[in-house]
Structure formats: structure tokens, C-alpha cells
Image (tube, rainbow, N blue to C red):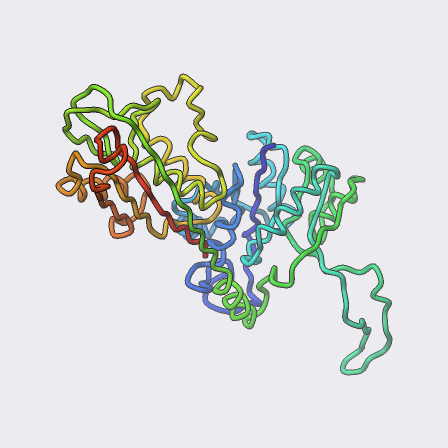
Length: 376
């Protein structure tokens, strides 16, 4: 199942105040739109629908993310249709349509919408109305309304892509949201639980509320990795991406980079994604002799797609020989390059096993690694 994201960001947001439309203003250290785009980093493809005047700013905010910018229309419905048309060439199975001004959206709500789409053509999060409802004129209450069956709508609103594209093309316009468009086309829409934290930034006070929520949602993951490779005939070993001269080589299905394998497994572990063997089975001949850089990049890309950055990695190589110290700086630089992080976040060191065990007998090399992932 392919899931696309369509982020609607073409409005002017004047009620929020400030010198810029609200989606480009900072909250908790990042532009609102950046928080929202990162929350949907798993989607492929992802479209951000913008006002034509905001093209340069949008490109800056989306830098480093796999996002397509599309010019919107004068109305929200028109902007959504423009985004859907841009997605049509990708033919995704599902699409999540989300307001850019809801940067606090959680993966829990997103997953609930996607789960509901397994059995219904549309799904959206909402909160039941719990407050009493009044009607009024001026400063006086004129009556009450029954709140039974009333909900406060949220986004993302998810749909089977072909259905919602056809619904938008057929709709005359003026709909409050995409659920209204879907229902006008006869599509069933399931309600899934929303969250109070999934607020929409509308007025000036909402920035402070959003900042508090975003600052409190830091997610820190820790993973461990361990790998072993035996020696075989050869004249060098590859450790943490660096060719080190030695009178033996390491035996393995790929290039047998024991250090890089341990770090890769640590990242997969932090993501609860198993190990290298799950993603690159050794039974598959295409990985015979493959550079371990491929595996590490995949793990890092998977982490970033879920909104995580590499906090740090620490790898210990366990061997009697070769000596790692003279090559440690080069190893840290190479690992940092592959992972797209700062060298100061990468530690490579070595120890012996005091001539004990298989490493002490110089039958091979072991590596132990820890990785920290941070999502803010």
C-alpha cells in the first residue's frame, strides 16, 4: 500500500497575526510547516500546496525533505484539487490530506486513520463535543443546542486516492473540508479518535500552546547492535568504512564490515526494525560483496523518514589486531559522512579481549554498538 500526503499551506493565515502567514512563522524553534512536513516524512510522495508568492520560503522550509511544491488556488478546495492532480501521476493507493497549521499531529492519530482505510473509503479524526452549546445574539444567550452526535473535526482526513480525486473533480465547491466533499460523492467516512493536542493554529495564543506541546513530545530511542566476522585469507579488512591493511580479511556475505554492521543494527534496533538480515537477506545473491554503506544509509533514511535524527553512535571494535587507533579518526569521519551527521556525534574505539576467546585467539573481530535516535 502506497500512502501519499497532501499538506495544504496556501492560505494567508491573517488571524494568527505576525509578519508572515502562520505556516512560515516559528514555533518551538522551527517553522510551523517544517514540523508538519516532518510528521509526514514517511509518506511517498508528499505534496505541499502553497501560495505562489511563498515559493522561495517554502523551498527553504522544506529543504532536505522529499517534498513536491504545488501552487494552490483561491479556495481550500481548489488547493486540494491542485495537490491531488499533482499526485495523480504517482497513483498512490491512499492519501492523507492535512492542514499545515496542525503541527502537533501524532503518529498515533495518523496510524488510526490509515487503519480505518482498510475497511472504509474515507476516515478522519474527530473529538466529541462535550461542552454545552448555546446560541446567542450580541452578549445574550438566546437558546441551547443538543450536543449529541456532534464532533470537532480534525485532520489528516484520509481517503482512497482515486475516490477522493473523483469526488473533488465532481464537487461544485464551497465545502468546509474534504469529508464534506467525500460525503457529497456518496463515500462513507469513518470517525477515528482525535487528540486535543492536534490543535489548529488559528490565533496568536495558539503559537504558545503549540510550542508547549511540541517541546514536550521529544522521543528518544536507544538501540544496540552486535556483530562478529571470522578471518579468512586476504590482505586487508574494512572497518567502519575504512580499508585497513592486515594479513587476513574478514569473511562475510557482503564486505564484512563488522563495525558498520553493528552500528546499522543498533539503528534498526532503536526503530524496532529488526536487523540487517530482515532488510537485506543474506540468501539474496544481489547483496553478495555489497558495500555495507548501503545498509547503513538505508537504516539512517528509515530513521529520518520517521522523523528521527541521529543523536550519537558509539562503536567498540573488539580485536587483538589490526590496531584501530591510527585509523579511528578516518573511521569516524567516514561514518559521519555516510550517516549525514556531525563527526562529533560518532565515536569509534577499540579494545582487546585480553587474549581470551575467539577474538583473543585472533580468529575474527567482534563489534558492539549503541545508537541514540531523537525525534522532536
